[in-house]
Length: 208
Image (cartoon, rainbow, N blue to C red; front, side, top):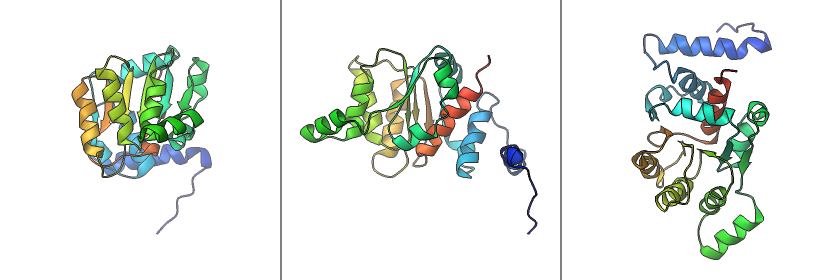
């Protein structure tokens, strides 16, 4: 098998070309094509060409919010680390994750709930608009659902892409049923890397 000789700066471009070649005649919605391809690029999983759900204008809503300084809140340090922060910081936003905070850990233990649930409650108290990027914990999505229904949270949008088996599908469907702006990886697939990839694709698409 022949090895391609590609300059380091050209690898991502060539990867996207290969993705396009493999997709062939499959038509992607042009509004979301960059997001879908970045998820495929991150995972080498072409199921993302079919399993990503987008509410109307969600990409515009998120990009506008980022350009106005919204915060991104993740459920894992991995997702937080994977998000390119340069553009977000330039607009005045932060990429936050409360999962390791001592107060979150203590409260979760006292209440007998997950740290992911409590960290979403902490995020609901932020004084800036918040975009949630959830790639691991279904309980984070269930916490968001509860907070929205009780009137304690009005998120800009939720990127709901946890991976796994327990309550994963159900928690994603509940976010869809909420009727709030959302990007959802339907089914069991997802992950912190996918959550970060979606945020990165969205911010790279912001017109200056």
